[in-house]
Every structure is written in structure tokens, then in C-alpha cells.
Image (tube, rainbow, N blue to C red):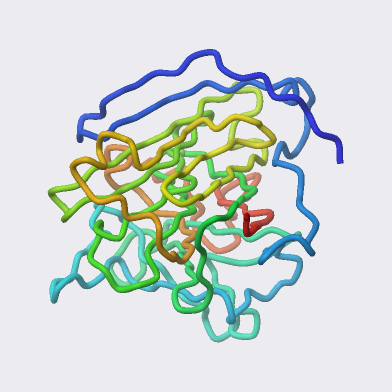
Length: 319
């Protein structure tokens, strides 16, 4: 494979969000972006050198690896938390009888070698939107030292909230066990993707460190495939975009926030892929006209523009 030289940094900024999140934003440009390509994802690693991978070349979603989360929330210490604690509007669905053989659903399916998650504006169980969320809990776990890479394209429109992230495999109250968000995007912002680390003692006593990467609009995340890689070592975490040689976001145990809270990321995690609708991540904004109105997405010229597309995932153990 051809390797391209990445030119970095136009600027790095430290910001503080309204909610107290500590945000670092870095602009990344690349010689690779001068060429019009469908995908700028990092070069693939030979399968024999990987501990695990998904390339979605079959129409069936593996039951040995993935299971569905269903509903609009979760139980926490006997209480039901609706909207997944974020004011989200979607109801996550599961495979119907007609999709039982492929373990797919009206909101999640495999097509053209891509995993596709399609939020839909339709009434279901008292909610106005449906979507899908899958995870590997109790089926497949991930740990350090390792590299996890996802090659993806995100949906376009106000209210889409796609994410690819990790949660502790053990039963531990959030955020004591930490949360690693490898990729999150706001549907209304085409050229910024973010990664984040959540940790702390409890819901109202925690810290969030965020790394945002800004790219040229000519190669925006909604039009082209890009990859984000997590390099996960003992006591340190780095995030890389595409074939870059330098991380756009790096955190280790010496960060001042870990003088307030325990560093929780030296443990085993499971993987989650989902697309939420609305929620506080983008100030609860939603444009209902940006969403498909049925499974066929008959109201859109190009339905894939309203879907999260995952081309492949790689998990490589490092020494």
C-alpha cells in the first residue's frame, strides 16, 4: 500500500466547554487530502497480524461478537434513566422476525461490505425516532497495550450523533471505570470529529477530557471515509487520524485531572457502535427533515448520506 506523508498542525487550542469539559482542538491537513479519494483511512494491517477484525463482507452480523441494546434508556441503581441520560430521542430496535437469519434490523444492516446504521423518523413505542446500538459486552473484550482502528463515514444533518466507544467490561458504576469515546460526531458539523475520556467518582463529580480534530471541508467526515486509531498503553492513551504519524489528542496519567480522580483506563473494555438522535451533545437540536422516513429512506436521493457507515474495524495487540 502507498503511504502518504502527513503534514500537521496549523494550530492547537485549549478550550473550556460550558459544562466544564476540557477540550483540545487540533487542525490537521495532509498532502493526501490533495487527492480526491473515496477513503482516507489508514493503511490496513495484514489479518494474520491482528487479534481481531471486522470487515463486514457478509450480510450476517455475527452473534458471537455483537448483541443489540433495546429501548430508550437503562436502569441505574433501581431507577430507569430515559434518553440514556443525555436527553436522546431515539428508541433502539432489535432484529425483526424477517431479519432473524442475518441478525440485522430495519435500522442496522450490512450492504456493499459496509455496516450501516440508519436512524429513522417513525413512531415506535411512544418515540418519534428509531435507531440501532450494538455492543460486544460479555462476548468480546479489548484491553491494552493495543491499537483499535475504525474506518467510517458519518451521517449529515442536524440531530445525528454517531459514536464508536468503549465501556468497562466489569459491572462498575459510571464513570468510576472510565469511558473511552474513540469517535463522536455532530451531524451539523461536517469537518470536526472528537474523542473523549470520561472518569470520576459519580455523575455529578467527574471530569471529561476531549480531543477535537478539524480537517478541510473538501474532505469532510460526511463525504469521505476517515479512520481514527486509539493507541492504548498502560497509563496513556493517544488518538490518531487516518495515516498520520502524530496524535491529535494524547493523555497520560500525569494529567492534572488525575490528581483529583483515579486513572481508570488500565482495565478491560467492550465496544459500542450507535447513532443517537438529538441529546445534549449538540444542544438538543434536531432537524426532522434530515432523517429517513422509512426503512427504504424513500425521501432521500442518497440514503447513505443519512447513515453511519463502518467499513472496517481492526484490533491489534501491541508489545
